[in-house]
Image (cartoon, rainbow, N blue to C red):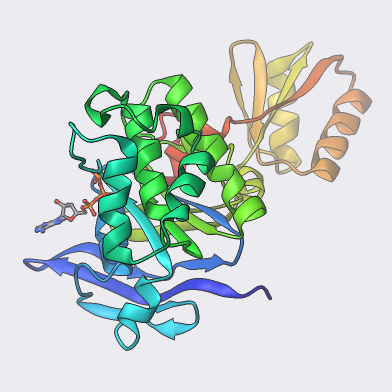
Length: 304
Ligand SMILES: Nc1ncnc2c1ncn2[C@@H]1O[C@H](COP(=O)(O)OP(=O)(O)OP(=O)(O)O)[C@@H](O)[C@H]1O
């Protein structure tokens, strides 16, 4: 099994008796781009604040880089870069000057500023006052700042929130390069699956503080049921025959719809229908989009 970078057990945060985060077991391995998903108010920011040691858990444990966060906080945090909500800058100062202020606090070499500006493709704009930057450029500058300390782990809270499609694309490409080019593991939160599905290899979905799904995106797709749709010559009697065979379906918009039939069941059903004199015009699979599956998982599905 690959090395765990973040592992929480029963991580819980209560505010005035209400669970903001409820017994969360996060597992993020080295090299992951982990999409941390959930609707607004699900508990993502609260979880991230606990991971960064900004607030204490009510209960549960946090291990980062294999060590307990509360025992080795400073050593662990030194290896984490983060961007939580909108970063604030001195608007009248340039990108270089803003980064210089942070560099001094961190005590890293001056040469690191040019390196991080290069990584986020802001080298050409680095002498302009930040107040003229677009939101996407400001977010990239925030990521540059989080990279100054050469972190092993990057934690980004909704980095694409409020960006236009071009800005989202830039941040996505930047995040995608982190594990492969710089060996950095990434935790990125979002309330939209579409924003993380093209960059994350694993996702954790939370709803009302609880983990409802944690696995690869491929397995998220697989776990969803696919409807099998049949168009036949005599739908009513075909439906009865299918019921006798144990396949409960419905007739809708000219199609017989059967949820969750596996391949042998489909083959058996088709065979028996043909044997009983039915003409079968079409057999198709209605695959749900990843977004449909996500909405179902977070309990906002219109079809379930
Ligand atoms: N300091 C606080 N005091 C009381 N309740 C809080 C506090 N911080 C968060 N909460 C509550 O905890 C729950 C989770 O909030 P959190 O901000 O972690 O969600 P989120 O998933 O990050 O959502 P968003 O994307 O809207 O920030 C919400 O119901 C919120 O109202």
